[in-house]
Image (cartoon, one colour):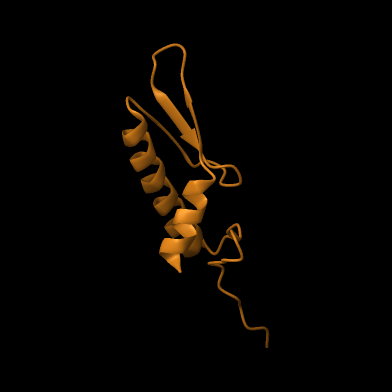
Length: 81
């Protein structure tokens, strides 16, 4: 499930070439603060996935609500007593 979630998120990624230095900038809409900027597109993709993984782990640890993607959710439901 985690791999499918990460793959689905990465399919939503947007990349652009920065005019000032020719570096690649990548971000994933709906995942605030998840971005990468690297010299090559492949390096940018790898760094973006790493940033996403770190963002997800921190979000889970802190109990944040994470975006649902393609019907996949990583959110842990709390029992109400």
